[in-house]
Image: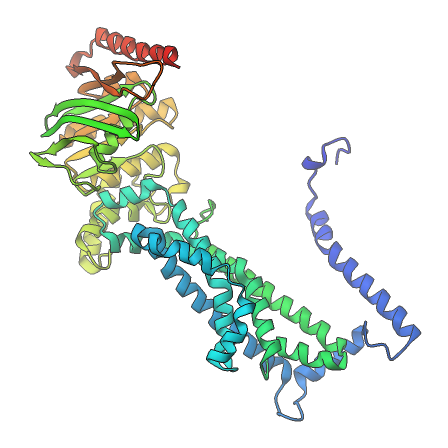
Length: 275
Length: 263
């Protein structure tokens, strides 16, 4: 590699790229375990930075040992509950957002009515309405799902509305000259154009969705990944909290990757590269 | 067939078109030329129904034009004329499916197969027979415009409107497209309106050339007066006379120099 080239033109080789990709992860782990072993050498009962053995023991008992009280395997029941809430929340948000964005994006009359309203509604801080949700929907599943929906739907609608506005005017005209009525125009032009953009919008909302899920679980729940973390916090169980956080991160990343591949697979025409 | 009666188009205080009067017979190919911003594209949008005339009326077979685009008027734009989410074949089939399936927007079974064959035949005609299953992004600019033309012709429109259809193409490909368009026009006896910046293109393709130009210019208020059709040149296409080209060229150059003065 020529050293005198501009930095902006210097690209890593293939193996170099892999090394650079791993570097921050390796550094993070090295810093953590150095600190952990130093603290544990000082005080073997230290709970703040548990060792790898302590964490894997804690995870083993969470994943493969029956809970004495309920007879369940905690990690898997927690994961199943959280993913169910997240999944229902995401699907409901996507459905609501798609209908609303198609309405406001296609029909000026609907847009005149709803767009300013949605802009205002999207400014309501979702966590501030959480008490209202608990009062109205009770403390069980529904209020948690509704929090996710309230938290991410307005942003997805606004994003999709902007995407609908990006459909070139030429295409709207062309569809009309090909004999489309309002309904078939939505069905054959707006819907297929918005679907891949919906998947992208959901990917971008994943972080927020997890945030609201864990917040709701922390406050009122009897299972779920967020509930578990906040429960064992009372015993300073960093040996369980840290692996749980890593597990949640992994799940979130997998969801994102899944949606990305789904977009590529279902909509090969989207994003320039067709094949 | 098309009668334009005293049409004006204003945007706020700005007059874009004034006092347009025009009669176009079925099967004419009108090239519309003129300096930039002289309202040729605006006039095309009026014909398309995308915009409405401020004053006056446009009649198609004695009836006022509907105020929205419809299946009687096909259109090819310079860009974004085809649907990027549909394959080449589906793009052309769309024009057969939409008018017949008012609720689903799709055809099924035998009807679908018939539509498929009809669309494939049309694509064969414009030279896209080998690209049926490709997506538009996989096609070159020229092939995309062939697709857009095929898609528009599928509707058998009364009028075909072309808004600088070949403006973004390489000269060689443009020549191929001219041949194709001339053939299609002669075969179908369509009425065509084409906006173009390329004077030569206007004269080679058209059977009639309309030159848009501002007759009156107020240097203090450039928007006070609109453009009119200053030259209406019927062409005998067997001997497209050079003098006509010169006349129009002079007119267009005159228009741009007037604009310079008024700026």
